[in-house]
Image (cartoon, rainbow, N blue to C red; front, top):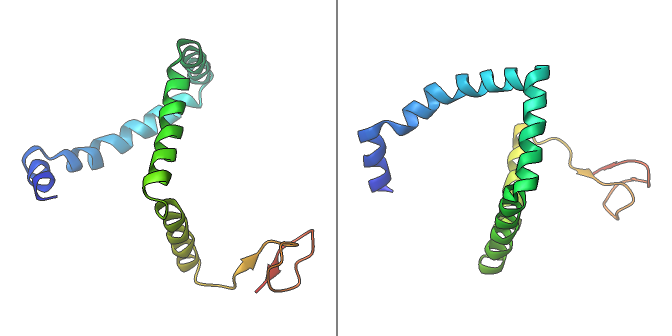
Length: 116
């Protein structure tokens, strides 16, 4: 961690990303909303599928997820629980929602959530 911090201080990588990347991404998103941008996005996706790059990236992502789950079985459930807790805290810690018809507390029928 110290080496990374020293590297960042020397080359100002995080500062560059914080200042330069958001405007570029917003311009890219604006271009993607145009008809030409939408067309080029579709052509790029088709090229990725037919070149095999899309499936290679998909395979690497899936195999990486499987390996992480195999080596660190508590990582993904712990990460999901932490995300849920953060979302609930940001939402003000209101009443907990349970899916309807799934055996949660409250009066949730098959058509809607119950309040706990």
